[in-house]
Length: 263
Image 1 (cartoon, helix red, strand yellow):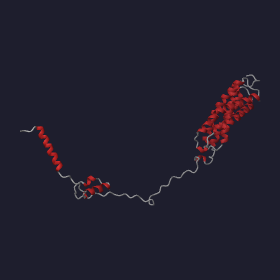
Image 2 (image 1 turned 180 degrees about the horizontal axis):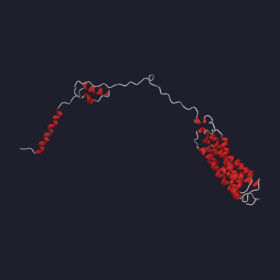
Image 3 (image 1 turned 90 degrees about the horizontal axis):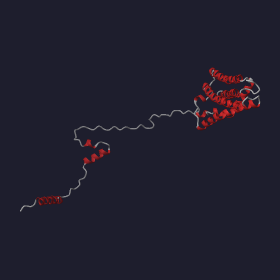
Image 4 (image 1 turned 30 degrees about the vertical axis):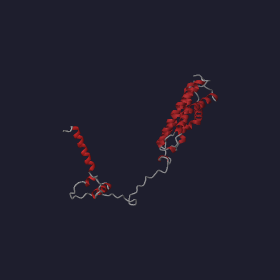
């Protein structure tokens, strides 16, 4: 009698399973010296694959140990010396005023004087009257005109937000005040103008132009000398002269001259 093919396969499987169960369990063996050497080499940073190579009588190159220099022998790098003064070097002491700087100051000072003379020639006004109107415009404009020259030396020339806001306020308020001073003196103390409204607008426009030119002239003269503390009063006077003469020229030109005189 022949067994089915499937039954013979099942019997063979049972025999193999029994042989596996009957065999004794494998006992663990302790680590040999070779394995301990591998672990020690790995702990010291040596690749384990080098120890697996056959011994060919070649000694391994020892790893050099770099010893750090002691703090006493190491060279000390001292930090660069700090500038004890917070001001730029050119502001530590007053720079000398050269001959070229005096020429530049004199040239810029002639411009307001030329404006005074030109205003007297526009409508036939007297020279001393236009000079007084220029002085009045510069005086009233100086009430807030100091804001135009704010540039603290402690900041090294760099402006902060408050300084910029003050400068903007000076640019906005100086022309109306200068125009009011020139216009008020001409209308109240002297003969007045033919058209008061146009005269005030002319003085306002002239003062605005004079303010821009005065700020530019002040900055140029400041760079010519090289120090903000030298001749600061002279620069401000020239800038205010630009403002007052501009207001006077605009007042005389737009107002049509004195009221009691013909064109």
